[in-house]
Image: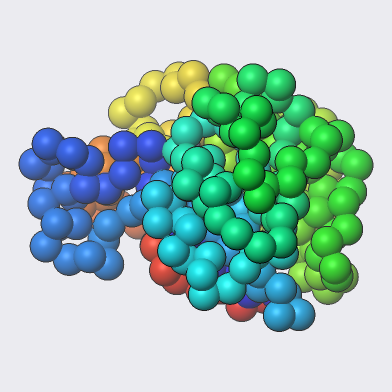
Length: 251
Ligand SMILES: [Zn+2]
Ligand SMILES: [Zn+2]
Ligand SMILES: [Zn+2]
């Protein structure tokens, strides 16, 4: 199973429009430091499965390979806005899985085009996509939101975005399931005390410490967090890193 981080930013992205903080200046100069909306691509047995769809160039990217399925974590714009264009494409429909959220986003459910929205996933009820087993995990966010436990039968990866903390049942599942890798929301620097919808770095690290994966990646990163790392040269515990757009992880 291969995971590509196709976007690792928050909804404002990096650089953030009109901001001249050091992180935004750096991202304008060096494209490797830019961050698109948080999303990922899983490749397994030649199939491409997308996790979230917030990149505005989603349709162009899908020209390279048509996704076999799209998994949505939730219906905030930064996770689905690429679908508003992709849906008007041609050819076979693309199955889209996500949480039960009748409101969805804009008119996506009313005018789905080629997107085949499946009934809302039930927490902890696994879905099989080829060889990939996908278990939906409830998260804490301002809209109905699911993380995903992904297994190819050998390797286990948990995708936990967007969330602040974890519901007890999700944490118990993960402690028992023992993922090799965890990708987790760490939107804010620690100066954000008691954030309401996203983890700060300390909160994400506490969760990682409790779940004990061999590797973990912080994602959904704001320009403020990048600026904080630049200003403080902060280091992360062994096995934990800031995710970067375009990087591939082989499991
Ligand atoms: Zn900035
Ligand atoms: Zn969100
Ligand atoms: Zn988000």
